[in-house]
Image (tube, rainbow, N blue to C red):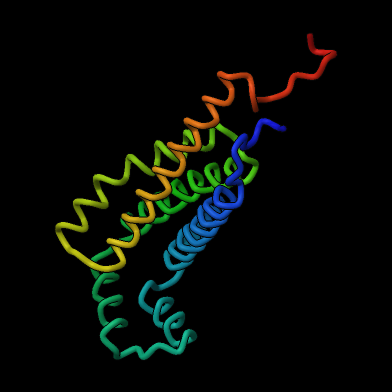
Length: 171
């Protein structure tokens, strides 16, 4: 048995890893998109993107987007891009570590996930929505899953099962 998973469950861990990696790619795209907007006229660039996606430029969604953009200056856009890239790095670390079934990645992901639950709960109470409730529920489920998985791995290591095998030449 390798260092990974003394009690199975690797498929769910890999699913979480893929989700983290997809979120990282989306955040990288957002960060690059925001930087692209900085290079040109913000409204013109976003209008081009919306038109290319087939969205009406006079619809309520487009109007909301344009209104939000009118409130943002280039400094704010740089901040949005920096935050997007920072979160992308965190999700990449989580995703890669979980994909390779590393215990440190489970601790890291558990810590990051649990640290956001109070903010998600606050947002859900402040402005309830189905999407926020589902997101919070998924994060709680991931946190519980990882906490149980970590406890099992620790128990397995303490009882001599699982754990990293040390090559005989290393003794």
